[in-house]
Length: 242
Image: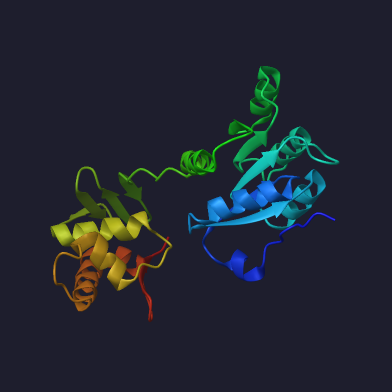
């Protein structure tokens, strides 16, 4: 019976990129696994059939699938179609690896939703580069900076550098304004003092974390009722809540 590598609990718990290789030639699957795991931030699981791939993905959704087409049982085209049809895997990147070099197969694979199509034999270095490229394309784009916040008590126009509380203009220092912007843009999330120092002050300046507490106190006082939205999370930092 062909060997299949199964994800281990300690591997699932780490932050590395999880790749699933679906390849019925175990020797080739092992070569691919070794090549990708040299990237250090990647961990690779291998299965040798389409059925095993679908079962494993149902348990643990990978970050990318390398998919052979000529598989026993459910072939690669059907695996791709099923993964794209499932809400949990519809956006998982898929790279097809196959000996089928004909244009009709390439078109069929890409039309089914494959992100790339690589023909065997291939270079392991090129394969790793294509994996990196697909993963970069699928990374979420950073949200644009918040330009306007409008709450129950507070209105902050960050483009115009203008803050109002209960309809009255509030004068903030540059540091207080940047601190407010940082808290509001990360609202409902706890930011540590060190993180606030990094974003607002920059680590090139020798500022103690106590300075964050002082500025938070001044900011709360100036914001009046809106100042209550800046919560202290004991032992962790600060959070702007809505």
